Length: 152
Image 1 (cartoon, rainbow, N blue to C red):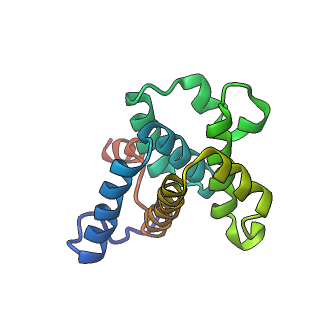
Image 2: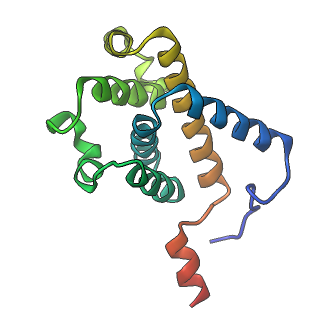
């Protein structure tokens, strides 16, 4: 793999802006549910670095291994609440926006489970993890295990 710019180590006001948005989201939305959404979106986008980070953060907030292992199949599991299902469906629709065009039924499900302010914060959170995934994948931000393997 060709070494690419470490965008996280590169001082940039754009990155600072993204971090500021993350701080706002952390004050505006359920952090445990947001971590679940971040893991799901990172699964969809195939971002190893973000999967590692947000799985670890979710566990720290009390998420379980069983639910994280079943997250890719949340529709078939009874372990997820109606509210979580609404968030996950909305996250998938927005992550696949070019294909899904955020269908009305998915929007209605999300809106039925979240206040207007929560839905806006959730949607911004989904947009942000998609942005971070694109940056991490584009710049080949490595998973910690890859760092250890390279150092050995």
